[in-house]
Length: 315
Length: 312
Image (cartoon, rainbow over all chains, first blue to last red):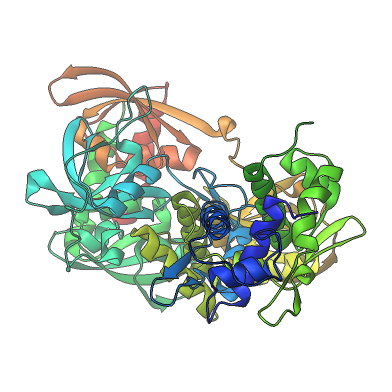
């Protein structure tokens, strides 16, 4: 009984894999892989004969199926009349590590790939990390990959942006890109602030793919470091803050800085402040557990604000 | 049931072989249920890959059947997935994005070299042509927390609860360790209590293995999609300069109520917990008007006055 088409195509895949280095000929496939010829052990078919042409067509269809259904592509060498498999996209070791990553990290919010895609069948009960992806990441990913500018409504105004990169900061997804209304100055846009219409669309592609170039000076790490102490433009001030000992890790996590002095109940932390108002707001979050001691400008900023609030808050 | 088309057979094969490779072994009936056919049908679909052979140039029989094994109604992958080994094309874009996020995240957690993972990530990045940054910090005591969880041992911690001024010592049974919303959490039961809670690993000021052994209960496994914080909801209504809202500390939600004057808005601000409410109240500009609930304005004034003592 001749093998089924499924059987035949899988044998062809295995045969190609076995002959990865030298490639395979049409005659070789007809002879060695069951299902193509009625008499596989017979002499090679005459090139151009009706039977040869039928075998050639069948093999071509099977190659198309291998490419479509299994992502296995062989190229035909016109001079040698041989089919050769392209190199595998991932090595077995790379695939093993990808499966490991997919099992450890659950990515929520990305559409499912095709059946049997790598990482699609891991046991996610063992996952250690969940990363939630904003709905618009898919659209921006495509725009970045295609190099096409996009238009969207952001905080009440319409922006046309050349998208460069996607990133996360403090659990929020951002797009970094060049704002066309500002001479391609780099801007960061929080994806959850982009207005989505009732039909779910938010982006309009503007122009031709391949028209966006990420500038050489673009720095991913800096682009998604949204800490005001990194990008603030106020005159830098060296601050000294007295922090209750139990709050030191949280304070350092929030501001960075260096512990310059430590006692049993408190530590003194030194840091450079580049955005005075943001510093004020953030330090107030520690209530009395973080008290600014220097410089006088920052002490005055906090004290004056508290004095004004204490005198004005009641109603 | 109608005969399966070739495309459908391949889809089933891809899915079932992925199950076998990614879970090591899969019961046949479970695999059949996953792809929506009967175990008998699945056996028929699997036949070509389980008993596949062909002849090489010399006429020798090459047997590829060893890669997939069907024993005791379990399908397993013994030596790699030869069909996936042959795959020359990159994954589709969604799978690539998913894998890139997973590898980028996992990479941030690893302290040892992972050259294969790095190379795979490089290929994914080049294929997707997207630069992506997904940070994930590893808090100081994560390792000992994971050790305690893996060994089924209690964990003695010094823990600063949200809103507390001072930390306290506790001993917990860490049932599950996971990262969600960029934070590491432990689902654990305090040895002195009966109800499990979530603890943030970055709020542990000290941690060491304890002496109490435990087996986690069976129903603790899922990572929560959200925490029920409805009891912690706090709201305040304020009238404030519109641009001042930008400078308020996150997280919070703003509900517009009105615009009483140009540049001035009246809004309701919602936060979770008293600490966040106090932070919002203190961070509002001094000339912001706080309307309620009753007593909120006085709460704000009193908070500021108390803090001011530290500066005078």
